[in-house]
Length: 437
Image (cartoon, helix red, strand yellow):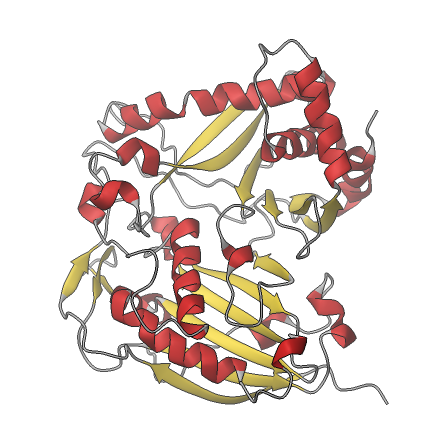
């Protein structure tokens, strides 16, 4: 008889820093306080059993719990609670008072990871069973910074589910913290390799910055999920095309190639009018532009420090160009980033009712792209080796998204996780991605 594919939660504990930490409020930056950062970013990290650890009696949940307490000594703001103004605006992290800490849920599943296909889509266990629930003791979920659930499977493998506030850390910052937990879990008893830095005062706070409206599902299209594994040969094919074209000997990345292909395939599948503009939005790390103001030139800074680049072109041009030419459109946009970020940081971009570069929209003509492949999540090791794969979770099926993640451990290539076309256009989009002519 097949093992039950359900999860039993065994306990939920408040993990506090292993040593006394500073008290008092820490003010968040302008970008930390941006309205869309209020979300708890959800992800699942799937770890296969490690044969060399068979019989050593180590429990993943208890190992991670101890390491979490140690890491929170340096990363003590993550044990705090978000503080708000009287009108509900996000203001600071409160690092003192009762009830501070990170909630860790310990759970187990009676089946093995193989029985649920290592949580490949469609997942055979609901994500809600693998993500940490909000404890009844927390009266206001908005204030939570981090929740963790460790679910151990019968095979010895385990899944770590995170709900991480985007207000306190961006993607590289969250991965930096998880790596620190991993260092302690593997037996490091001293400080972590990367010393964390708060330094939020270094992030620009332009007085004239415009804050656009939040995305709304009203009138938006419901979009279908599709995940694709992309081979190294596929990526190499389009890189070679770009290198063979007359682009001044410049180099292109796997990210640029795959985003160009996805943007073109989506544009063709959706059937946009050729003369209508389509848009591509993606976050770029702004740390290199703030070396002079960030503590330690940005090393160890884990707060939000990015800029959203927006690239636009007529649908007919995106659909009808070669992939090297679509890559060039993306590269031209990336080259504008330092100048555009400076205009925003100095307040010039927001003057006279300018646009909000950080606004997320449900406009179907806009594709929002995230690159998780270089953030560091795939390298986190709690003592059982790096994860087999990482599953970013999206809760808004009306915002067109494309997320690039690393493929299964030790497998070359990449994985694209998309939710960017309506159900009736998924087959056309998928076929467009497969077509290498």
